[in-house]
Length: 114
DNA sequence: GACATGACGGCAG
DNA sequence: CCTGCCGCCATGT
Image (cartoon, rainbow, N blue to C red; front, side, top):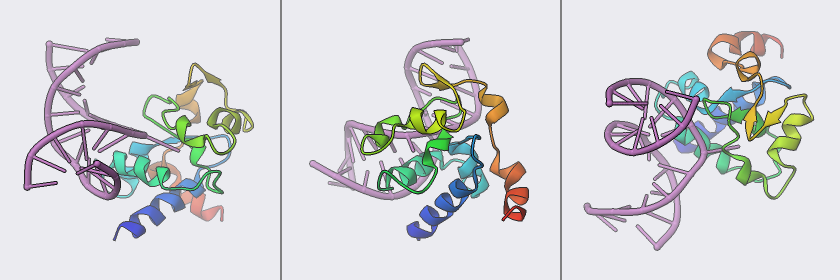
């Protein structure tokens, strides 16, 4: 069922720590659909903005804010990230590799932290 | 059903 | 580093 997929995406997004970011592909890989990155983006586009989910912490594989257009009805993606200490330059996250949070590597400690 | 369009990613070249 | 091209899958014409 699609709604289960949506829910799974949203639950992972909720686990992204403040001040860290992840990618569509990483979330898709974590869900077992290694080639479903587009559906992760689609899932986030189904949210009603502004949203309680930290959807602004999800970017593409290059750390580019490709989803900024969907934040028109609330605080901008840049503002939300900047508020967490993440710097943006030309729609790209600075120091992206260091801020990258991989669900596959860090989901266990994230769950234990609950 | 055919086609176009995405918050994508991998792989040439 | 950048540029296409292709595979992917849900949605809208």
